Length: 429
Image (cartoon, rainbow, N blue to C red; front, side, top):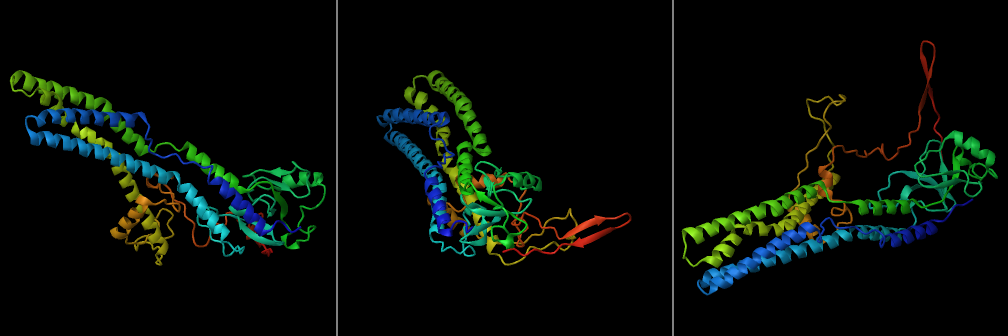
């Protein structure tokens, strides 16, 4: 029993990644075809039409005022086109973020020489490792690098990374699914139905794995991971802030704007049609002055540009701060007046200075590039970080990186006392 080769595992992973690049569409957060967009743009176009008619009328009487009205229409039209271009480009960058990440992972794997100690895949969020037979040797392989056909040596209590079957069993029998744990009670039943003892490492010629159970992987964990990514992005809706902003714009455009237009129209008719009758300002009073009253509402078409700029600035600030913390060599320290052994004490902190130049530089890069490393667009990084209430970090000792605890002592209670028994450490591999 030699297991599969590293080269074969690499081919399977690359085939999955190449397929996944075309199967994970990321819908943009800005829906350019929503009813609200049509209402906002339609309102702006209506105001522009009123200003055009007003400008055409004024040119025959007051050329400067007429030209000014036409120029204002041109500026508003440019604002609409600029906003549409920004949203379209932002949507395109967001759509291709996940594809860029999969491409980066594939490039890392293609350049991988086969040494597991040298493999660095920061784009693959895998923490746990499993003891796998690769190239005839037992290696600690990250979860997302396991492939179908791998021979895995599981210890009792370990969680299963994917669908696996007990070595030496009939097809379809003695299986464990992803998320289950290997328990001794299962083995007692399975041993009786197994064709042979291929599940026992000692029988298979791997005495160093004694105490573990051999399983064959029936699936590739990376495939289920890609499916989870696709499912997440399919159900990703608008964020909380986007929903709130939509409500505000809907109220302004559908309720406040009609009221303001009606009030301005009535006031202008009364002032210029009744009080100042005969002034010869009918068109300007009805269209021009009314359009100028509601002109600020037309500027609402620019709100996506400011929204995108604010989101990119916030994402850039978070990424630059994270990188500064990663590069910082100083340790986290407790305050002088805090007892570090107090469970209710504040956590240790350290001061890191981040210059505005670094933030603006990264913001300029984000404005025109896909952030496949942090997925700041598709994951809505800024608002996601704003909704976090608890952060769970991995320390340098790998406390969370090694989630399967190993007992060191056994407590044996006695009548009036207890005894502590030290366990001998088993060397594997």
